Amino acid sequence: MRMIRLVIAFGVSLGLASACDCVRRSVKDAKRYSEVIFQGTIVEIHESSDGYHFPVATFKVTRVWKGHVGETCEMLSIQETIGCIGFVPTVKVGAEFLVYAGRLLGDLIPLQCQSDLVSRARDQIRELGSGRKPEKAK
Image 1 (cartoon, rainbow, N blue to C red):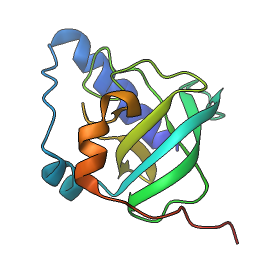
Image 2: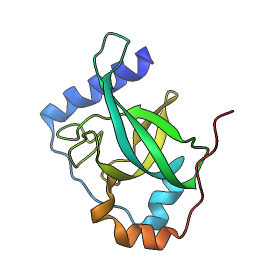
Image 3: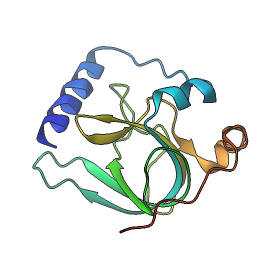
């Protein structure tokens, strides 16, 4: 977890020196590049416990299209303002997202410019299909 924080901090600092072009991929491409795709509502945001103080969002997952995702899922919830890493829309408790994510050094991070509020992702959800329920906790 510590290494991911360093990589993100480095990426964000690089973003200060260069602009980020946010280009949304097709659903087909986003699906190919994602390790997990799910729909969920943010139920909590807390600070990471590793000293880097990055926000971590806990999602209550309602539907899954790809990957192993349980009824809750935690991931870094950095706001994408610089550095091309993180969520484009505002991340807050109660927000419902369609999340495309991959892993970087073991941590889930949102696919650049792809995750969005469900209210703005209806066409993507339709294209993804019905999906499945999240995995039950063991």
